[in-house]
Amino acid sequence: LDLNELNRAVDCIDQTNIIDIFGFGDSYLTAQLFEHKMTYVNKYVNLKAIPTEQNQQALYTNKDTVAIVISYSGETNELIKIAKILKEKKTPIIVLTSIGDNRLSHYASYILNIGSREKIFTKIAPFASQTSIEYILNVIFSCLFKKDYQTNIQNKISYDKENDVRHPLHSPVNDIIE
Image (tube, rainbow, N blue to C red; front, side):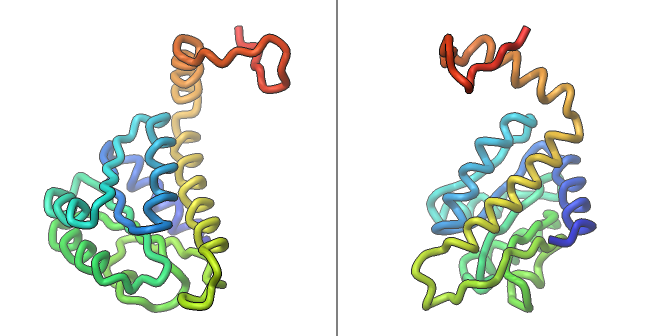
């Protein structure tokens, strides 16, 4: 992971309130976890499940939106089409893709490389690539959380105190917060 590129991508996300994420299959599933976490840093994430909805979403982005496009191969035709639309709309594009040259990386404003140990056809499941994508998205989230740590942690604790009913009396997971 190129730390300079990561920091530039995080700064880009930090300067917007709307993030559009594009990805299919396992990339989409990992993006769902990221979408949930981003609520803790007051960022609105658009993530559409249906490919045609992702195309529509791309049509309505602009330079004030940041797009994250996730593709292990970087050669998914539908995502190439979306990236082309995003580029035309002057939307900053953060691409999470494998190491090496691929078509998707040519549209990127920022490239964050996914570990590239798996083969497209002979892998038994997306273990390494999905773990790598999840790791990168977690690093992005934690960097954003850290940028305004005191506010973010206070907001989370305040919300949890009022709304989280999981308060076991004698449990190692129980916090003692005053």
